[in-house]
Length: 402
Image (tube, rainbow, N blue to C red; front, side):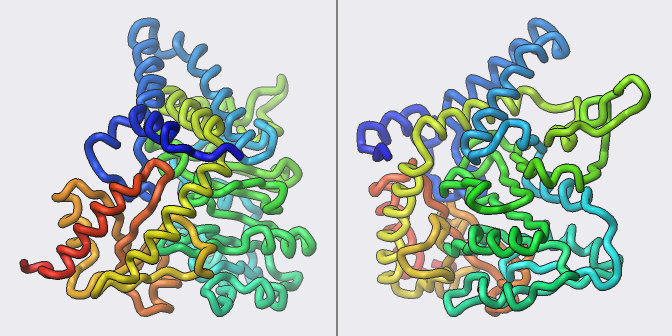
Protein backbone atom coordinates (compact mmCIF):
# COMPACT_ATOMS: atom_id res chain seq x y z
CA UNK A 1 0.00 0.00 0.00
CA UNK A 2 1.33 3.40 -0.99
CA UNK A 3 0.50 6.01 1.68
CA UNK A 4 -1.04 9.35 0.84
CA UNK A 5 1.91 11.59 1.70
CA UNK A 6 1.50 15.37 2.13
CA UNK A 7 2.81 16.17 -1.35
CA UNK A 8 0.40 13.72 -2.97
CA UNK A 9 -2.51 15.08 -0.93
CA UNK A 10 -1.59 18.63 -1.92
CA UNK A 11 -1.68 17.68 -5.61
CA UNK A 12 -5.06 15.97 -5.22
CA UNK A 13 -6.49 19.03 -3.49
CA UNK A 14 -5.08 21.38 -6.11
CA UNK A 15 -6.84 19.26 -8.73
CA UNK A 16 -10.16 19.65 -6.88
CA UNK A 17 -11.65 23.15 -7.32
CA UNK A 18 -13.96 22.93 -4.32
CA UNK A 19 -11.07 22.47 -1.89
CA UNK A 20 -10.08 26.11 -2.43
CA UNK A 21 -13.57 27.39 -1.57
CA UNK A 22 -15.06 25.32 1.27
CA UNK A 23 -14.15 23.01 4.13
CA UNK A 24 -16.17 20.07 2.90
CA UNK A 25 -17.22 17.44 5.46
CA UNK A 26 -20.27 16.16 3.62
CA UNK A 27 -18.63 13.49 1.46
CA UNK A 28 -21.28 10.95 2.51
CA UNK A 29 -23.89 13.23 0.93
CA UNK A 30 -21.83 14.10 -2.14
CA UNK A 31 -18.11 14.57 -2.46
CA UNK A 32 -16.13 17.17 -4.41
CA UNK A 33 -15.33 16.19 -8.02
CA UNK A 34 -11.89 16.70 -9.45
CA UNK A 35 -11.14 19.01 -12.35
CA UNK A 36 -10.35 15.89 -14.37
CA UNK A 37 -13.86 14.60 -13.79
CA UNK A 38 -15.33 17.95 -14.79
CA UNK A 39 -13.15 18.01 -17.93
CA UNK A 40 -14.24 14.50 -18.89
CA UNK A 41 -17.89 15.52 -18.72
CA UNK A 42 -17.32 18.78 -20.59
CA UNK A 43 -15.36 16.94 -23.26
CA UNK A 44 -18.22 14.55 -23.96
CA UNK A 45 -20.75 17.38 -23.84
CA UNK A 46 -18.73 19.36 -26.38
CA UNK A 47 -18.44 16.31 -28.65
CA UNK A 48 -22.23 16.00 -28.56
CA UNK A 49 -22.61 19.68 -29.43
CA UNK A 50 -20.06 19.56 -32.29
CA UNK A 51 -20.76 16.14 -33.80
CA UNK A 52 -24.34 15.44 -32.76
CA UNK A 53 -25.37 13.50 -29.67
CA UNK A 54 -25.91 10.20 -31.49
CA UNK A 55 -22.64 10.46 -33.42
CA UNK A 56 -20.67 11.37 -30.29
CA UNK A 57 -22.11 8.28 -28.62
CA UNK A 58 -19.36 6.21 -30.23
CA UNK A 59 -16.74 7.88 -28.04
CA UNK A 60 -19.22 8.04 -25.16
CA UNK A 61 -19.76 4.29 -25.30
CA UNK A 62 -16.01 3.74 -25.07
CA UNK A 63 -15.89 5.93 -21.95
CA UNK A 64 -18.85 4.03 -20.53
CA UNK A 65 -16.94 0.77 -20.91
CA UNK A 66 -13.90 2.34 -19.27
CA UNK A 67 -16.15 3.16 -16.33
CA UNK A 68 -17.39 -0.43 -16.25
CA UNK A 69 -13.87 -1.81 -16.30
CA UNK A 70 -12.76 0.57 -13.53
CA UNK A 71 -15.78 -0.36 -11.42
CA UNK A 72 -15.07 -4.05 -11.93
CA UNK A 73 -11.49 -3.52 -10.79
CA UNK A 74 -12.68 -1.70 -7.68
CA UNK A 75 -15.10 -4.50 -6.77
CA UNK A 76 -12.91 -7.44 -7.82
CA UNK A 77 -15.31 -8.75 -10.41
CA UNK A 78 -15.77 -8.83 -14.19
CA UNK A 79 -17.16 -5.92 -16.21
CA UNK A 80 -20.07 -8.15 -17.23
CA UNK A 81 -21.30 -8.07 -13.61
CA UNK A 82 -21.58 -4.26 -13.54
CA UNK A 83 -24.56 -2.13 -14.56
CA UNK A 84 -25.04 1.61 -14.26
CA UNK A 85 -28.08 3.40 -12.89
CA UNK A 86 -29.18 6.95 -12.14
CA UNK A 87 -28.91 6.57 -8.35
CA UNK A 88 -28.13 4.03 -5.69
CA UNK A 89 -31.78 3.88 -4.71
CA UNK A 90 -32.81 3.27 -8.32
CA UNK A 91 -30.24 0.47 -8.62
CA UNK A 92 -31.41 -1.27 -5.43
CA UNK A 93 -35.05 -0.86 -6.40
CA UNK A 94 -34.51 -2.32 -9.87
CA UNK A 95 -32.73 -5.37 -8.47
CA UNK A 96 -35.34 -5.92 -5.76
CA UNK A 97 -38.26 -5.49 -8.15
CA UNK A 98 -36.68 -8.05 -10.50
CA UNK A 99 -36.93 -10.83 -7.90
CA UNK A 100 -39.63 -13.50 -8.31
CA UNK A 101 -43.09 -12.59 -6.90
CA UNK A 102 -43.48 -12.52 -3.14
CA UNK A 103 -45.83 -14.90 -1.35
CA UNK A 104 -47.49 -14.97 2.04
CA UNK A 105 -45.09 -16.51 4.56
CA UNK A 106 -41.91 -15.33 2.81
CA UNK A 107 -39.46 -13.73 5.23
CA UNK A 108 -37.11 -10.78 4.64
CA UNK A 109 -34.37 -10.12 7.19
CA UNK A 110 -32.87 -6.64 7.44
CA UNK A 111 -30.41 -4.85 9.69
CA UNK A 112 -31.83 -2.24 12.03
CA UNK A 113 -29.82 0.38 10.12
CA UNK A 114 -31.39 -0.24 6.72
CA UNK A 115 -31.63 2.79 4.44
CA UNK A 116 -35.12 4.26 4.29
CA UNK A 117 -35.31 4.06 0.51
CA UNK A 118 -34.68 0.32 0.63
CA UNK A 119 -37.38 -0.10 3.28
CA UNK A 120 -39.81 1.75 1.02
CA UNK A 121 -39.12 -0.87 -1.68
CA UNK A 122 -39.51 -3.73 0.78
CA UNK A 123 -42.99 -2.45 1.64
CA UNK A 124 -44.27 -3.83 -1.67
CA UNK A 125 -43.25 -7.33 -0.59
CA UNK A 126 -44.92 -6.83 2.78
CA UNK A 127 -48.13 -5.78 1.02
CA UNK A 128 -47.98 -9.12 -0.84
CA UNK A 129 -47.84 -11.02 2.45
CA UNK A 130 -44.12 -11.24 3.17
CA UNK A 131 -42.83 -10.62 6.68
CA UNK A 132 -40.15 -7.98 7.33
CA UNK A 133 -38.03 -8.90 10.35
CA UNK A 134 -35.22 -6.92 11.96
CA UNK A 135 -32.00 -8.72 12.87
CA UNK A 136 -31.04 -7.95 16.51
CA UNK A 137 -27.91 -5.93 17.21
CA UNK A 138 -24.86 -6.92 19.21
CA UNK A 139 -23.62 -4.87 22.18
CA UNK A 140 -21.86 -2.43 19.85
CA UNK A 141 -24.98 -1.75 17.79
CA UNK A 142 -23.96 -3.81 14.75
CA UNK A 143 -25.99 -6.57 13.16
CA UNK A 144 -25.52 -9.70 15.30
CA UNK A 145 -24.28 -12.53 13.09
CA UNK A 146 -25.14 -15.04 15.82
CA UNK A 147 -28.72 -13.77 16.05
CA UNK A 148 -29.03 -13.81 12.27
CA UNK A 149 -27.96 -17.44 12.10
CA UNK A 150 -30.66 -18.41 14.59
CA UNK A 151 -33.31 -16.72 12.40
CA UNK A 152 -32.54 -18.58 9.18
CA UNK A 153 -34.94 -21.14 7.77
CA UNK A 154 -36.38 -22.21 4.44
CA UNK A 155 -38.84 -19.29 4.41
CA UNK A 156 -36.14 -16.59 4.36
CA UNK A 157 -36.03 -15.25 0.81
CA UNK A 158 -33.80 -12.24 1.26
CA UNK A 159 -31.19 -10.80 3.62
CA UNK A 160 -30.61 -7.06 3.16
CA UNK A 161 -27.82 -5.14 4.85
CA UNK A 162 -26.73 -1.52 4.79
CA UNK A 163 -22.99 -1.93 5.24
CA UNK A 164 -22.19 1.58 6.51
CA UNK A 165 -25.35 3.21 7.89
CA UNK A 166 -26.09 6.82 6.99
CA UNK A 167 -26.40 7.97 10.59
CA UNK A 168 -23.03 7.20 12.14
CA UNK A 169 -19.73 5.38 12.17
CA UNK A 170 -20.88 1.78 12.31
CA UNK A 171 -19.36 -0.75 9.92
CA UNK A 172 -21.63 -3.78 9.77
CA UNK A 173 -20.08 -7.29 9.41
CA UNK A 174 -21.00 -7.62 5.75
CA UNK A 175 -18.64 -10.50 4.92
CA UNK A 176 -19.74 -12.57 7.93
CA UNK A 177 -23.37 -12.11 6.91
CA UNK A 178 -22.40 -13.18 3.40
CA UNK A 179 -20.92 -16.44 4.68
CA UNK A 180 -24.25 -17.35 6.25
CA UNK A 181 -26.20 -16.32 3.18
CA UNK A 182 -24.04 -18.43 0.86
CA UNK A 183 -24.16 -21.41 3.19
CA UNK A 184 -27.97 -21.35 3.15
CA UNK A 185 -28.25 -20.14 -0.48
CA UNK A 186 -30.31 -17.13 0.53
CA UNK A 187 -30.19 -14.04 -1.73
CA UNK A 188 -28.13 -11.28 -0.12
CA UNK A 189 -28.29 -7.58 -1.03
CA UNK A 190 -25.70 -5.07 0.22
CA UNK A 191 -26.26 -1.33 0.22
CA UNK A 192 -22.68 -0.07 -0.09
CA UNK A 193 -23.59 3.57 -0.67
CA UNK A 194 -21.20 4.90 1.98
CA UNK A 195 -18.66 2.09 1.62
CA UNK A 196 -17.68 2.34 -2.05
CA UNK A 197 -14.66 4.59 -2.26
CA UNK A 198 -14.09 4.52 1.49
CA UNK A 199 -13.48 0.84 2.29
CA UNK A 200 -11.96 -1.99 0.28
CA UNK A 201 -14.89 -3.75 -1.39
CA UNK A 202 -14.33 -7.27 -2.73
CA UNK A 203 -17.66 -8.77 -3.79
CA UNK A 204 -16.17 -12.27 -3.79
CA UNK A 205 -15.14 -11.92 -0.14
CA UNK A 206 -18.46 -10.27 0.76
CA UNK A 207 -20.45 -13.15 -0.70
CA UNK A 208 -23.26 -10.90 -1.92
CA UNK A 209 -25.63 -11.42 -4.84
CA UNK A 210 -26.38 -7.72 -5.35
CA UNK A 211 -24.44 -4.63 -4.28
CA UNK A 212 -25.12 -1.00 -5.08
CA UNK A 213 -23.51 2.37 -4.49
CA UNK A 214 -23.93 5.96 -5.66
CA UNK A 215 -21.34 7.69 -7.81
CA UNK A 216 -21.68 11.04 -6.03
CA UNK A 217 -20.44 9.93 -2.62
CA UNK A 218 -16.95 8.58 -1.88
CA UNK A 219 -16.37 7.66 -5.50
CA UNK A 220 -16.36 11.43 -6.24
CA UNK A 221 -18.34 10.96 -9.43
CA UNK A 222 -21.20 13.10 -10.72
CA UNK A 223 -24.73 13.07 -9.36
CA UNK A 224 -27.07 10.93 -11.41
CA UNK A 225 -24.72 7.93 -11.54
CA UNK A 226 -24.59 4.68 -9.59
CA UNK A 227 -23.07 1.20 -9.74
CA UNK A 228 -25.03 -2.03 -9.55
CA UNK A 229 -23.19 -5.33 -9.13
CA UNK A 230 -25.11 -8.55 -9.80
CA UNK A 231 -23.41 -11.88 -9.20
CA UNK A 232 -23.32 -13.71 -12.54
CA UNK A 233 -24.78 -16.94 -11.12
CA UNK A 234 -27.67 -14.98 -9.60
CA UNK A 235 -28.54 -12.96 -12.69
CA UNK A 236 -30.78 -15.61 -14.23
CA UNK A 237 -33.17 -15.31 -11.27
CA UNK A 238 -33.85 -11.64 -12.02
CA UNK A 239 -36.39 -10.32 -14.52
CA UNK A 240 -35.95 -6.52 -14.56
CA UNK A 241 -38.19 -3.81 -15.96
CA UNK A 242 -38.20 -1.56 -17.91
CA UNK A 243 -36.76 -3.17 -21.03
CA UNK A 244 -35.65 -1.99 -24.42
CA UNK A 245 -33.49 -3.13 -27.33
CA UNK A 246 -30.35 -2.89 -25.16
CA UNK A 247 -31.52 -4.84 -22.10
CA UNK A 248 -33.58 -7.30 -24.16
CA UNK A 249 -32.17 -7.31 -27.71
CA UNK A 250 -33.79 -8.85 -30.76
CA UNK A 251 -32.41 -12.35 -31.37
CA UNK A 252 -33.95 -12.94 -34.79
CA UNK A 253 -37.16 -14.49 -33.49
CA UNK A 254 -38.01 -12.39 -30.47
CA UNK A 255 -36.63 -10.31 -27.64
CA UNK A 256 -34.59 -11.96 -24.88
CA UNK A 257 -32.84 -10.54 -21.84
CA UNK A 258 -29.10 -10.09 -21.97
CA UNK A 259 -26.94 -12.58 -20.11
CA UNK A 260 -24.93 -9.86 -18.33
CA UNK A 261 -25.74 -7.12 -15.83
CA UNK A 262 -26.66 -4.73 -18.65
CA UNK A 263 -30.10 -6.32 -18.61
CA UNK A 264 -30.64 -3.59 -15.98
CA UNK A 265 -29.67 -0.80 -18.37
CA UNK A 266 -31.53 0.88 -21.21
CA UNK A 267 -30.10 2.47 -24.32
CA UNK A 268 -31.01 6.01 -23.24
CA UNK A 269 -28.33 7.11 -20.79
CA UNK A 270 -26.26 10.20 -20.06
CA UNK A 271 -22.87 9.46 -21.57
CA UNK A 272 -21.75 12.85 -20.26
CA UNK A 273 -22.27 11.69 -16.67
CA UNK A 274 -20.70 8.30 -17.35
CA UNK A 275 -17.64 10.00 -18.83
CA UNK A 276 -17.26 11.80 -15.51
CA UNK A 277 -17.80 8.58 -13.55
CA UNK A 278 -15.16 6.82 -15.63
CA UNK A 279 -12.60 9.46 -14.75
CA UNK A 280 -13.55 9.45 -11.06
CA UNK A 281 -13.23 5.67 -10.83
CA UNK A 282 -9.90 5.66 -12.64
CA UNK A 283 -8.56 8.34 -10.31
CA UNK A 284 -9.69 6.37 -7.27
CA UNK A 285 -8.07 3.17 -8.51
CA UNK A 286 -4.89 5.11 -9.22
CA UNK A 287 -4.74 6.42 -5.65
CA UNK A 288 -5.57 3.01 -4.17
CA UNK A 289 -8.48 2.16 -1.91
CA UNK A 290 -6.25 0.83 0.88
CA UNK A 291 -4.41 4.15 1.14
CA UNK A 292 -7.72 6.03 1.05
CA UNK A 293 -9.21 3.86 3.79
CA UNK A 294 -6.21 4.29 6.05
CA UNK A 295 -6.16 8.07 5.58
CA UNK A 296 -9.87 8.40 6.42
CA UNK A 297 -9.55 6.11 9.44
CA UNK A 298 -6.61 8.10 10.85
CA UNK A 299 -8.49 11.40 10.49
CA UNK A 300 -11.72 9.99 11.92
CA UNK A 301 -10.11 8.35 14.96
CA UNK A 302 -8.41 11.61 15.91
CA UNK A 303 -11.47 13.76 15.26
CA UNK A 304 -13.68 11.56 17.43
CA UNK A 305 -11.31 12.08 20.35
CA UNK A 306 -11.36 15.86 19.77
CA UNK A 307 -15.15 15.96 19.53
CA UNK A 308 -15.52 14.09 22.81
CA UNK A 309 -13.77 17.00 24.54
CA UNK A 310 -16.25 19.60 23.24
CA UNK A 311 -18.77 20.72 25.89
CA UNK A 312 -22.37 20.07 24.87
CA UNK A 313 -21.47 17.78 21.97
CA UNK A 314 -22.63 14.18 22.13
CA UNK A 315 -21.51 11.67 19.55
CA UNK A 316 -24.28 9.40 18.30
CA UNK A 317 -22.04 6.81 16.69
CA UNK A 318 -22.37 3.06 16.96
CA UNK A 319 -19.62 0.48 16.51
CA UNK A 320 -16.37 -0.53 18.14
CA UNK A 321 -14.02 2.35 18.95
CA UNK A 322 -11.11 2.36 16.51
CA UNK A 323 -13.08 0.29 13.99
CA UNK A 324 -15.51 2.91 12.75
CA UNK A 325 -16.01 4.62 9.42
CA UNK A 326 -15.40 8.21 8.39
CA UNK A 327 -19.04 9.10 9.16
CA UNK A 328 -19.40 10.75 12.57
CA UNK A 329 -22.91 11.41 13.91
CA UNK A 330 -23.48 13.88 16.73
CA UNK A 331 -25.87 16.31 18.38
CA UNK A 332 -25.00 19.66 19.92
CA UNK A 333 -26.88 20.79 23.02
CA UNK A 334 -29.46 23.47 22.26
CA UNK A 335 -29.08 23.18 18.50
CA UNK A 336 -31.42 21.84 15.88
CA UNK A 337 -29.16 19.77 13.64
CA UNK A 338 -30.40 21.36 10.43
CA UNK A 339 -29.94 24.85 11.88
CA UNK A 340 -26.42 23.86 12.94
CA UNK A 341 -25.68 22.71 9.41
CA UNK A 342 -26.81 26.11 8.08
CA UNK A 343 -24.77 28.01 10.69
CA UNK A 344 -21.63 26.13 9.71
CA UNK A 345 -22.35 26.65 6.01
CA UNK A 346 -22.32 30.40 6.59
CA UNK A 347 -18.75 29.92 7.82
CA UNK A 348 -17.76 27.99 4.70
CA UNK A 349 -17.99 24.59 6.39
CA UNK A 350 -20.20 21.84 4.93
CA UNK A 351 -21.61 19.02 7.05
CA UNK A 352 -24.72 16.84 6.71
CA UNK A 353 -27.88 16.49 8.78
CA UNK A 354 -30.33 13.57 8.72
CA UNK A 355 -33.83 13.02 10.04
CA UNK A 356 -35.65 9.83 10.95
CA UNK A 357 -36.56 8.96 7.36
CA UNK A 358 -32.95 8.13 6.44
CA UNK A 359 -32.65 5.22 8.90
CA UNK A 360 -36.07 4.98 10.55
CA UNK A 361 -35.68 1.65 12.34
CA UNK A 362 -32.43 2.63 14.02
CA UNK A 363 -33.33 6.25 14.77
CA UNK A 364 -36.59 5.20 16.40
CA UNK A 365 -34.91 2.40 18.35
CA UNK A 366 -32.41 4.92 19.79
CA UNK A 367 -34.96 7.66 20.37
CA UNK A 368 -33.29 10.06 17.92
CA UNK A 369 -35.22 12.53 15.78
CA UNK A 370 -32.20 13.97 13.94
CA UNK A 371 -28.44 13.90 13.84
CA UNK A 372 -25.69 16.12 12.46
CA UNK A 373 -23.05 14.26 10.46
CA UNK A 374 -19.42 14.87 9.65
CA UNK A 375 -18.24 12.71 6.75
CA UNK A 376 -14.48 12.76 6.25
CA UNK A 377 -12.57 12.18 3.04
CA UNK A 378 -8.90 11.59 2.32
CA UNK A 379 -9.01 15.11 0.86
CA UNK A 380 -9.64 16.69 4.26
CA UNK A 381 -6.72 18.26 6.09
CA UNK A 382 -5.84 18.73 9.73
CA UNK A 383 -6.19 22.50 9.21
CA UNK A 384 -9.76 22.07 7.97
CA UNK A 385 -10.56 19.88 10.95
CA UNK A 386 -9.21 22.56 13.29
CA UNK A 387 -11.51 25.13 11.62
CA UNK A 388 -14.45 22.80 12.17
CA UNK A 389 -13.60 22.26 15.84
CA UNK A 390 -13.22 25.98 16.44
CA UNK A 391 -16.55 26.71 14.77
CA UNK A 392 -18.35 24.02 16.77
CA UNK A 393 -16.82 25.34 19.98
CA UNK A 394 -17.98 28.86 19.20
CA UNK A 395 -21.49 27.75 18.28
CA UNK A 396 -21.76 25.58 21.38
CA UNK A 397 -20.80 28.53 23.58
CA UNK A 398 -23.14 31.13 22.07
CA UNK A 399 -26.10 28.86 21.27
CA UNK A 400 -28.51 29.17 18.32
CA UNK A 401 -29.86 32.54 19.45
CA UNK A 402 -26.43 34.10 19.93
